[in-house]
Length: 116
Image (tube, rainbow, N blue to C red; front, top):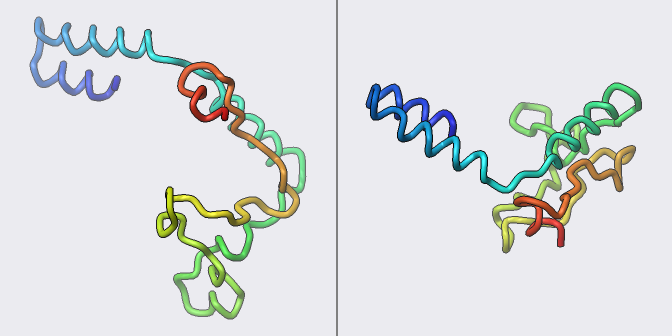
């Protein structure tokens, strides 16, 4: 939103630039907010620094090079977009992190529809 407003302001010039800038300010200021993403990325980075996070599961590893199949890379990967709702049950975290949640919806802002 902010980038689009800045580009529009640059394109139309002053004094009209005040309109997309004001609209962006109001939109962002009144938009529902949550710090769940911020808290999640900080928790993930803390784990990376402090503990053995394990390896990327083999089915998620790059399989687009010679020899990948021999290493078991990508063999059982399920492409989520090929499933109803764009989601499929499969392990995305290393064994060492199973059960770990980094994104925890707060119940505020746009998290409300993700909490349930």
